[in-house]
Image 1 (cartoon, rainbow, N blue to C red):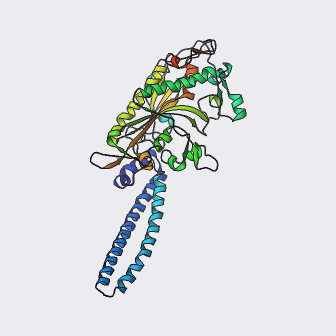
Image 2 (tube, one colour; image 1 turned 135 degrees about the vertical axis):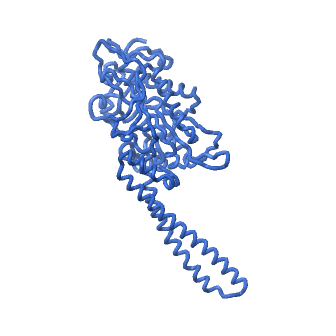
Image 3 (cartoon, rainbow, N blue to C red; image 1 turned 45 degrees about the vertical axis):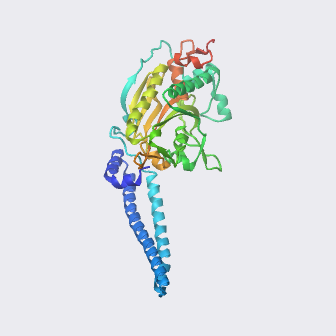
Length: 427
């Protein structure tokens, strides 16, 4: 969320940003925050003055008693002050709760390079990479192909768990693990610290890293527990340093997280219901960074480069898009998507996102760093998909599909495949 001091000092900037988003409702919220913040400051001043008055009277009472003089008037005056303070404090608490309610829902301030747009159709292409493969045969849907190869079982997964799940076996399971190990090794060589996070988070921790709407639309809640299954390792890694203060010399701190991810969202038709593009459960390798504010935009580009290098090594054609104002959500100040080429549909589809959240998550989580001069400031946080294996597997199954129905394994993954060079073929 936005720091209250930032809101006080930059109301016109935030208003302009909300107008860019065409979010009239949140413009009203901002105006209410500014109004209530003014009320809060007046009440706080009044409360502080009463506390000082109480202290001054107490001091006077002690002096009068030492001199043997009557202090009954002062005692009577002092007795009325706590009630006045309590009443003011109740009003202050109510105002603070309302301000926090709005602040938790006001979006981050967008970077000036974020394009204006209504929805994903207005995202702006930044660049393309890779040669689009040509096929002299009709490509099979990746889910159907995986079933024919005996490496995926959607029917039994639906029987046991419902739609949006799958049993993956042998060559495809090895491919899933290979993609994870490839991404982990690639990022560890670049100085990222490997983390396997908890697969559940408390609501308090979770509120620090994501939009509150996600609690209803995305996350699975554990029945009768204040715990949620994680939607990505970004969330528990971000919350890991909640209420902590870094030393400046320890930043940037770079993590590579690996975990299963659990999401309610799922497609309702076509490849989404019998395939790997949208799943309730999938594995993902994630990049996450805590850094000083002045370094975050440089690191944002570095994280993007990391993801692109991995897709180049995999031999998957892709493009990068700059996400527009109508598609970016409330947490990120700027976001790139990588969209891989899916030849059966002859289009690019999102396989990973790269977000600079500036101080938005850090303010919620109260994560700061101490400068050399002793001042403390909120860090910036960034997250970027290394590889979401379900979507990467679909990209491999389509781009490396052979006429005989087998799938060639990308060369960069062969060291992790246990001798499997072709899924559906002989070792």
